[in-house]
Amino acid sequence: MNKLIELKKYQIELVLAAEEAMKNAYNPYSKFYAGAALLTNGNKIITGANFENASYGLTICAERSALVHANAHSHRQFKAIAVITSGENFKVEQPSMPCGACRQMLFEASQVSGNDFEAIFSDTDKTRIIIKRISQLLPNAFGPRNLGIDLKKYRR
Image: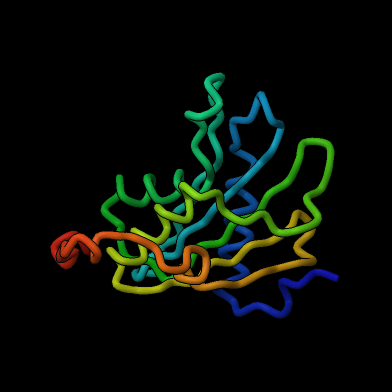
């Protein structure tokens, strides 16, 4: 059963925007599609998709793609992010959780935002959805505050 009906309107919009972004994945090696959609404090949705590279370590995940896209357009305060994934010839049956690099980037974005924003993760068919706070993705995380950095001037 599609779990979207149990979500709030903005959460549904985010999952659907992430699903649309997923179609833009550049994935010639893994054939794995990932889309992400960020909701800014100004209610703008900014998307990203994974972008692979022949030097696999240089691949950019959808979450980081969306964060960099948002930053390029002067958005650094977020309410939520949604992520959805699929294989080229298979459906992902469990929501894909972010890699370590994405968790760290999302944690930093939450500190810049001044908001422990929510993260919504969906399987391909939208039958399984996990909702977490960014702090739950990277417990006891190290970030700018640990370095005594005041992030207020970076909020947009």
